[in-house]
Amino acid sequence: ACGYGAEEAWVQCDKCERWLHQICALFNGRQNDGGDVSFTCPLCCLKDLETGKRKPIDKRPKTLMGAREYPQTKLSDYLEDRVARSLKQELADMAKKENCAEKDVQTVNPGELAIRVVSSVEKRVETKEKFLQVFGGSGFP
View 1: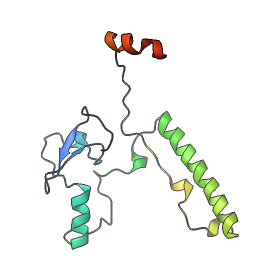
View 2: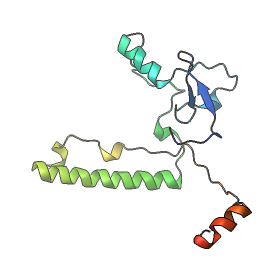
View 3: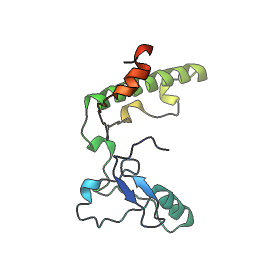
View 4: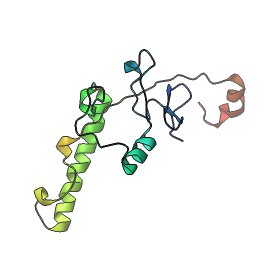
């Protein structure tokens, strides 16, 4: 359902025993060297917040890094720039539509945007001979 393949690492929720891809759950496997770090999935966290068993975090723990604390890549810089430009344009359009100054429009500040690439896989896949025989004349590859 999430789009990641079987080669991704998994983590199991200690409460509901649901399995999630580490990348989808934002679980940092590198900080789990001994395998003894407890993990609660986002759905269980929300349930605990709603029932009062869990309180919202006032201060981010050291182990829970924000996007700006991850290394930048060419792809993250490109994505960040594109999204920031789109947000700035949307801000200008909204201000014009509401007939007010941009500073008076309630929206996300494009300057606060941080995008990082946490997983990027480049693969080469060999095309099987039988597949080439069947589809080779159809403009493939």
